[in-house]
Length: 317
Image (cartoon, rainbow, N blue to C red):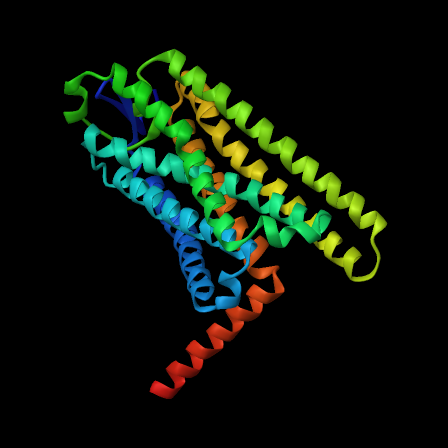
């Protein structure tokens, strides 16, 4: 192995570390530069959502707010894991398991919300007379509850399989908090990969159906209806891009495993950081860009709140 990297065997797993402090400092600093701006953007957008009753009354904005909660929390928790890796802070497996379960579940919320938002746009554009009855405030809450439960199902399955095979002594050992510590059996990892493929295949079919239906309406519509349908098409295309990034994120562990088998730890660490920044961070940055800045009503509310904040600071001075 390269002289600038090393591996430590703890908790039955090989923990890979780089001994080049400059590279570790740079990669960690880049992670902070990318993560925190998007965390603040998510917090600001959620604040705007809470301050506007008109936004809280519409299903698409309520669904969008769920992505802000899930993505903001996901970025904070994963950044905590990055920092613990930077300072080589090993934590008990018993502490890492709930943290890993929460992070993995949150990672699935946004793709699932994307499906719900696309279906909402499909009903609004293709079945406008039914939209008011389908996406009532009470039914929207039920849909949100179902989305959160569905997002954590695969994670809880992984947890149950892990608990059925993990010895009691395993929980007190020290490790880094990464999701692979739940996989004590090779078949478990293979099962997880197959479920991922099946899940995203179903999601892709739903998105393509919604996009095709809206495109059909756009071709037949005229005037304001045509404009709304065309805007819905563009939104769904951006959702497809976001889903593509989320899909790549789920493939990353398999790519990293193949690179690790080659024995080059330096390349493995570089690829792992790149995957985190490119797919974990940037894929979640797409949500506020798609709905926060592109939506005229939400963007107007953001500008108004920003102006109020600036005026308040000027008055205090």
